[in-house]
Image (cartoon, rainbow, N blue to C red; front, side, top):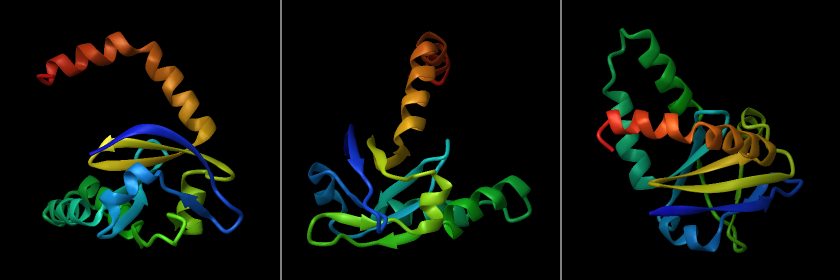
Length: 143
């Protein structure tokens, strides 16, 4: 599982070092795609295949299902690690997530999220203000 929050720099070529604790779980391959909340999602290849299979099973006649599938699948790219444990993030994905120099890599159990550092700070500040409301909603979902 992926957990934790790490600050990293994106080099001028668009490469991001993935935390060493996370690399082992991505050794068999990884896929990066457009995520929700203007961040990127990184999945281990096996997790990605499970998600892609579910997305391909959504009803093609449903407008929102098509839009979500397009965002996730057409926006995806397989990535490889270099010898320093960096991945090259394609320009279109860096633009989508407004990634420039500084990024936050956050572990979320079965995926990694890559955030623009200031967007992450804003998201966390707002989320922290609403902890009670969020926890009440989760209790309605059985958590």
